[in-house]
Image (cartoon, rainbow, N blue to C red; front, side, top):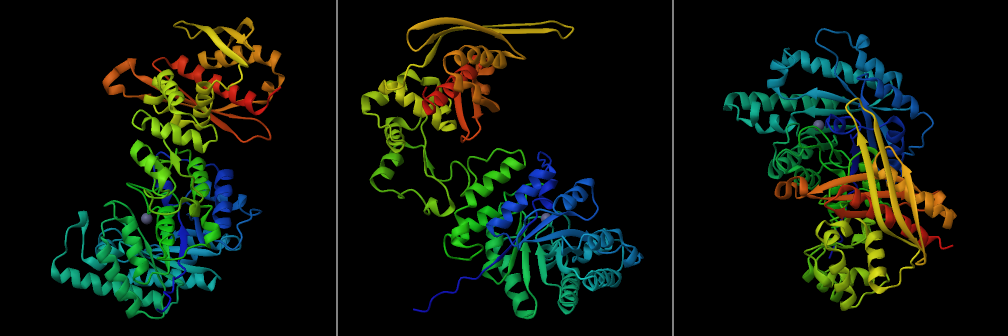
Length: 544
Ligand SMILES: [Zn+2]
């Protein structure tokens, strides 16, 4: 049997341009530089850093990128064709792009390819739009740039759709299609390096995309085509796959699917889902093992949590919370997985919560090297109802480990909180006094009281605990609190009596950071549980 040739497909990331149109995200210039360096190391071929001259961010980023190591990845700037009646030499987008050409050698020009948009949005003639595209492409090419053309609304132009996805009448549909091909023909003759068909509205389906790419690759054998997809109908990944299978050489999207409306196509999903099944090759198989960590650093850089259900890179992607699946996985690893998680650098998760049952507790404890027997697992369940029901152990493996050790009786009694109290006095003019005090048992013998003031209850509780523990365990001075997050659970049913889950990350120089969790109907209690686990874990790692 002949070996099937797996094609190498270029990946073009537009997280820092199209992706930034999502309202709830933000990225700093240093984080953007760091992310671009990681993308380059992973093997992304092109990365668009912004819209030419659109804002200060693009300017600052272009400057900050000067010394950055982005390897062979090509940086790109996005711009418009010259305006109606303007001289291309005076066009600000083109000037901005050329000014940065040494560090950013690729120009992505957005070109209106649907007759309807030429008439209604640009308010110009079809001929003038062709000339605007022609002159801008030629000007940038003469200036030494690689030019890629993004054909806006290409899928709707090819499929005869107008506003709101409604069909055009037959006559206009044909005229629109003829114009679309006139534009492609012109771009092909100008030898732009890639012609990108955009599904700007996200309204296409895989059959339409497959059909268009088959016909484009046949009709323009000298040109190279790519696809830029959006996820409005939920078909973005399937559309991108269809474009690749029908001959696209490049795909455009955003690393983690950020973008306006429902987002751009998520590149980590396309890369993982197709490469793991041998349908295309985007990066080396060695690089692919960095997919999960690249995605996580992208979520962090944009200030987002990784969605539990994100395909391939989400915390739930290779997890099992169902007790029955958990025990089957033990007998036959991989029975419930679609691929080998190690190939994308993921670790299969055995989830522990109210649904997962004792089987998963035993399984997870075994995988962590602290195997519980059935009776000990029952003790863990009985003593930690709120943590089980509130997904505290899904949020923190560290807290689960500590709970296992307590159930087995192997956790050293370095300290425990016997009782605690928080005084929180506020008045109408904004004065506030917060003090926490607690009774601590140290090493199972000494009982001592400690108190501290703080900016808020969590701060005061942490300070009070730290104040006393430092006297007995000086290494505690090296550890610090990082991110602190609170999630209310089941508010609709419980109203203000709902449980809250607090997760806290800790860090210390020279140590990997660790996260702990607490669940309670009281916010301070939940925070204290997480803080206690944070200190316990540190003392476990650094026995004195
Ligand atoms: Zn787009």
